[in-house]
Amino acid sequence: MLNVVVLVSGGGTNLQALIDAERRGELHGGKIACVISSREDAYALTRARQADIPCEVLLRREFKDQNAYDTALLELFKRHQADLVVLAGFMTIIGDRVICEYRNRMINIHPSLLPSFCGEGYYGLRVHKAVLERGARITGATVHFVNEVCDGGPIILQKTVEVLDDDTPESLQTRVMEEAEWHLLPQAVSLFCQGQIEVCGNQVRCKPMEQQEDSI
Ligand code: GRF
Figure 1 (cartoon, rainbow, N blue to C red):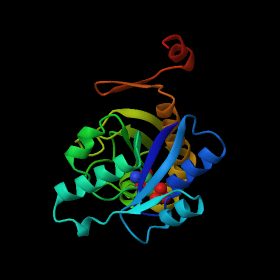
Figure 2: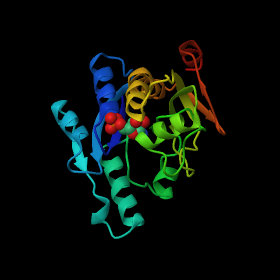
Figure 3: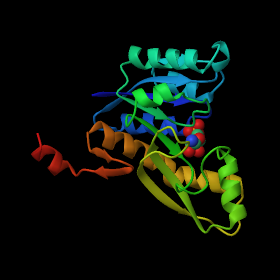
């Protein structure tokens, strides 16, 4: 079993999707070992506690600089023997040292089809507002590896969602979560934990199971 450490800051609906998938036995090869929150009042922590998952709270303001914060984050990853780190709505900046140490072992979910509507300032409702303002007919969600470029790492999975004429940022956000995010994230974690993901430069290949068994 690989240890999955999930980083959260808010409501934690994506964390809930992972918890539910694990309960259903669909997080093949993976176990949520710990949830780390950047806020004490994140509802995601309640979800984790209800599921008996160990929780940690790491407040950026308690560290003098990025380096000290990164050291604490790395210590927590080590303590919980993280094989995979999942950013599920995590709103605190992670330094390059952590990104480098967990290269191709840290994934993020973004609520648009990368490389559109991403980068600095594109988070939460702002993403969906920008999609509507641009008049896009299709949006969706993306799970990608984290690298030094904001929302710029290798893409693992994407799913499209139709934009409707009467959508508001709120209604679009809800549909993107329901139709895309909550399915993609457990699927990507499961693929990773089964060793089915291969990264080559910026490209990701998902190996079929037979090929994986052949190579053992
Ligand atoms: C999601 O829309 C996710 O794509 C983005 O942050 C939001 C987190 O929502 N990175 P939740 O806390 O999982 O409900």
